[in-house]
Amino acid sequence: MAWACHPASGRRHFCASSYSVNMNDFNRKVEDATARVNKSVGEAAERIEKETAEFITYLNDEVVPAVRQHSTKALRVAAQKMSRLADYLDEIKSTGR
Image (cartoon, rainbow, N blue to C red; front, side, top):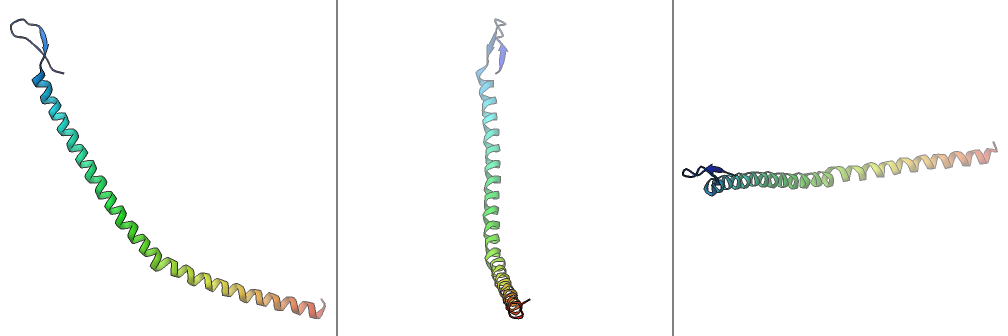
């Protein structure tokens, strides 16, 4: 608030013109700050969307095929070991150990 002394009476009174100038300046600063924040948030959102799309593409093109390949290989290795175990158990059963 802006208070000033009236020149003739010496009494203090509120000076509305000074107040409105300060409020206009404040409002402009708030609007500028809001615009900067909105711009930053918008840029961050665009970047996140782009990087998310790239990450999903990487998962689909690189990770998923590798997991499938290694998981089938792991199943084949496990099947071979189970077959050997079954052969071993049959051998033990036939020899009567």
